[in-house]
Image 1: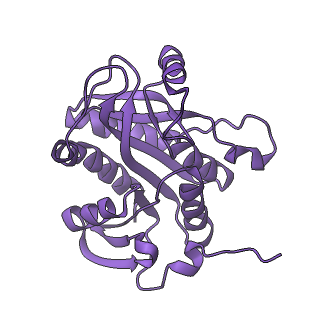
Image 2: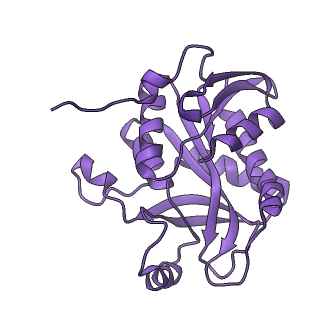
Image 3: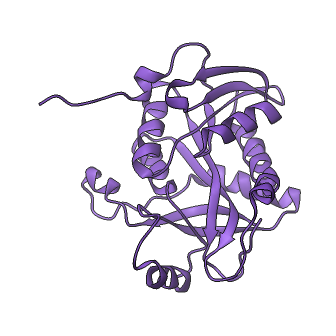
Length: 243
């Protein structure tokens, strides 16, 4: 049997050294926006499959930013190889999420302490329910940066779903809300598992784009503007761990 494999170890060239700290949005165009807006002396180290990756400097330290695609299998592939083959020590996911908690609103920031998930990805480790959690040092640093900015933020558990469309979503979302979950997205559990297994650091910082129980949803323009706080918190957190 032939196994198909085209992973980032094959895709990423050696155009630029990848930094020890990487910011990862799902959308590669958001990675380009971060690089264009915040980094200097930028070099694109990957454009294969349009999964754009850039390395530059932020306040004098080297930081990389790269897309990770949609879903836990995609983020798992990219983060695994960044951790194991490219010397990356810390990854901060920056993304959007739908709010579940009633005291979370659009444009708020959610810093993910831990993830509940319906994904089978964690079964590969063979230890039962492997709880995917953030690195505390990254988490504490991000909380301090968010406080310093004075933005609205919450810290707590989120839900990482393998399903964007689910016929039982209403019932499931009500349970998640009632069990104390702040928001729902599709990637963070995979990132946290990969960091734990490889003894690296990981954190997710999310900006709320819509609410699943209130009539709140940002327009594309509002999403673009509201993500500024999230990106700056992530960059300032990354700076503390960068070289």
